[in-house]
Length: 490
Ligand code: CTP
Image (cartoon, rainbow, N blue to C red; front, side, top):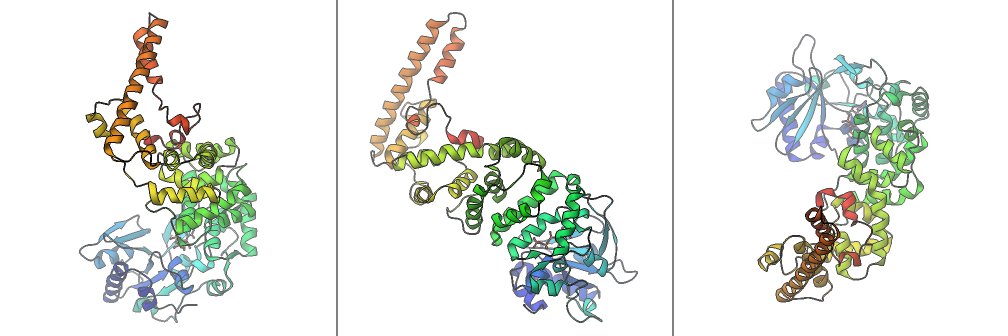
């Protein structure tokens, strides 16, 4: 286990964070205030893992008013700002590129299971014991006042031994009653650190589930934990392992009856974890939790999928995308396997948003993944020899421009067209064909109904416009896959 020292902390953080930490400690020495590093960063330091944030707690001397807020304000360098959350809560000291969180020691009580805690001033011991797991309840005294009368690490439970044994142990049997979201934290930590839940913690969790504690937790709080679970893939967490644990602990069905982890979701989720840690396609801007939920829920029945999204307070466009992912996936994977030619692959993939692309990639069989990687590396960023503006200048207008552009792109990627002149010639041909069809349909519609003639003619003209070339890639009856998942691309 790494020796926990201030020097080791400094070495484990960015230079900007170290500067803020030095400023806080200098002020703490000046005003003789006790400052400790606490929680996750102490745990990660001892495990020799990178620290992702710095959490400090401030112990005011008896009768002193110097708590986290006053200390942060006095310590703030000129380029830093201080954001206070509440009277006893956390204070963030931040510059443009770094931040650290401070809090005054406090105790917490829960008015009812699942509610947010009520906070009151407390001792360092209270503050450590209110925490979820013993390995998160360690404090490392940093300032002279914090070290006074103490020998090294403060461990009110069995944190150090549990770290060595790779165990998540709770302080008391009501830990999950107080805050059922700790079950998701437990799965996240267990998966990330390869820890297991102690038997007593399993039993505390079973009791909380048996007593219906999860029903009291808001969808927003649950969703935030689910988000963190997928985001931690950046730190090496395998989401399939975390969700497997939640299923084994019966947490999934406590969140929502019918929610499960279908075995078919495991391989894509595992690949997603690796893809988030090391992106296979450069420059994709995908929120891990959106892709993760789409994969996880894809093989559940539609009702359970909808209910789970509602339970996690996911609404609107994101909910629609996640709910409709299975349709997109099945159609796009079929087409990816069947299409021939680089142009056709591009026509299938280019309209997809980044999240759909990533979800599709990790869902695809090896041959499909290879095709996607080749497309991303070789064709995705290529620009054909003409732009939409060139086509408008050449006399095309309306939907004919989009149709012609996509025809040109396909022909160009397939090597059937090379020059700007050839592209413009194809554009003119497409433009003339679209115009002819529009006219024919309008004429048919006009002779079919004299009353609502103009309206029907316009409608007929619109419906005559789907790209004839698109139907060579997509079944005529189905919209292009991007329509369902990517309204913003329409
Ligand atoms: N905590 C808790 N119950 C929660 C959330 C947090 O007891 N529902 C405690 C944990 O002991 C944790 C500390 O508050 O160590 C700070 O929370 P957070 O920053 O979310 O956790 P870290 O452990 O710092 O971060 P991570 O788990 O992501 O490494």
